[in-house]
Image (cartoon, rainbow, N blue to C red; front, side, top):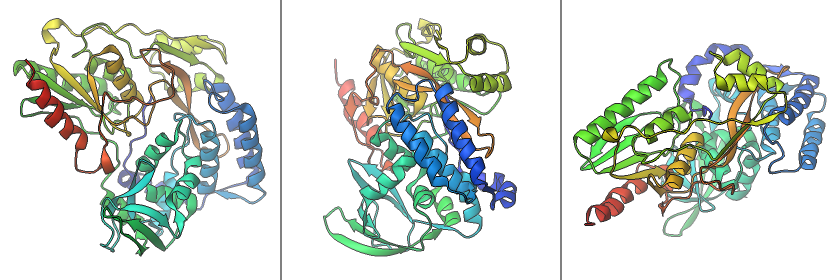
Length: 473
């Protein structure tokens, strides 16, 4: 379906150091930026499955005119240019039509001693809470509610950042704000500051304002300890319960799919050998990926043939064909279908029904699938699949990403600036045919408060649901 960005900035600092050193002063002529905006709009119209799914063409035309007018005659930095394209691609409110966070300018900023806001925030129930405090001031504690920054209400700050985040709903925009992180996005959208007057409210209801010093970017990235998404594959037993976190449904390794399948095979061999009756599959903080991975996992606990969509259509285009020719490793049915259809043509792409594994290998106990607002793309679609087919009980909070969506993402580079743009070429409807714009809503709703070390969702599953289930006759 797509390979969600899941890098760690600490790795990028090393990998891009030489490039950044050469390009940190990179500027683009205003005429080139204007030309790329025109190219971008035309290409999105041609390549996006439905650019105007959620907004009118008139609104997009007005946004296009406003951005072109804003460019002026002066040259633009890479950060300024990236932000223009971020904002323009986000106009349509489609999560898979996006320009990523400007990592290269951020790294250059860090290398030049740049600083950022010192609090990591979580966004829940229309409030912002302190998730981690990297400031020297110990008066602000995890769980405190942030009311304002420099007398600007936190809601107004969110509303200033949201236009740069591509997402179908405000709920999803806030999830992406957590994913990319508030300190990074505050810097990229609102600029650098040395101090912040932060007004907070404690759990007891007491309010106070503290002046916080910005912290060096490198300190922030080191203390943050990596990205919010989970890349690790974990299989273990928690007492009598089997627990699988499959990690992302993708891999950069040539044999990644085979290694994933070997992991799943080994896990279920162990489960069946021990005659385990309860299984937890953890799809929280999962970036998604390809259905070849998720289908294989699900086949071990499915009790009938299944498919991850009720409708899957693609739109081909000149830029998609160029991308396909460049990246295809073989002329399979999928590649052939894209190349053989006329530019602009929408066509259904049918994939075979997936069968469960042989009955002797199949897990026949109770399955619980955990999700949260950071369950993305194919992981969200997989959760919808098991819910729609009745293969598992879903526990957690509504996913930010939606299981009926414009996806099957690919990318292209703008000709003048080289900035990468991601665009959805397909439309996917969840297995039960529901086209409502909503995330996967769990059967048992449990909030993943602060996304911190306290695991409310897993604890509820183990202590409440499984205790209850094991007591039934």
